[in-house]
Length: 313
Ligand SMILES: Cc1cc2nc3c(=O)[nH]c(=O)nc-3n(C[C@H](O)[C@H](O)[C@H](O)COP(=O)(O)OP(=O)(O)OC[C@H]3O[C@@H](n4cnc5c(N)ncnc54)[C@H](O)[C@@H]3O)c2cc1C
Image (cartoon, rainbow, N blue to C red):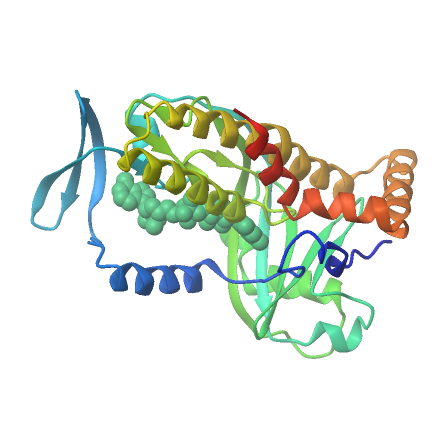
């Protein structure tokens, strides 16, 4: 229907391309970097509660050796969508959960040799079974929707995944399946990103459907934004700067990320033929015009939301 070429963003970023970096790899880079910086990284500490007194925030964590307390001036809670910190502070996680599940299978089969017009990242609209085909190093990741009330074991079974992959490209041999997983998908944003000395970031603060690849990227943008502010505060700036973190990052999570990802989900799964034709024609038109394609990619690459956040006082 439409192909978007990220090199059109060459004037907007030094990196006008998409990097498909699995999060476990990113974690290894970050851990090495933290060690070089002399940071104290502790695994096996499950935070169960947070308390704030005066200018100190203290977390209680369960460890193999029993509970411990750790205190500091500020806390950045990046403990994921089920954030124990967010729950412990009673911060609402407003939004909804999609009715369908997202089913993923990865295979080394070279889809690009059979489907010769595909890109590295493909969103394939279909009224019955939409599809995402994503190239990661050495594998293709295939994502399809699955009915909410189905049996998870059956969905993840060889039979079901083989049948699903055979619908993508029919071949006489079975596929080798390297990974499989299944997810509930949500669109939710925490009511506040700041609670006194505790700041929420990443999935603890916002979750969205994965169509558009905005979740981890949004979390990384939170981390950069917040780290700059904490650095300024440790150098003497007023800590009201942290309210600005809330205003900037929460606003773009609601306005940009939630809207963009939900719209992607609507376009890819639209069943009404008239609406489907309209939105796919609109997409073709955007891709065919360099100015509107650049504008679209500024939003899809989240450069626009970073610029928008920077404008918020
Ligand atoms: C199918 C799918 C595809 C996706 N694709 C993309 C994509 O292409 N691009 C993209 O940008 N994003 C993508 N995402 C979103 C991305 O995976 C998440 O946004 C990202 O993993 C969030 O990172 P995080 O560090 O905030 O949270 P998490 O990765 O959930 O990390 C939270 C960490 O906190 C730890 N933790 C949890 N509770 C506690 C506790 N009580 N005490 C101590 N530690 C705790 C956990 O062990 C974990 O290490 C995708 C998501 C899904 C489901």
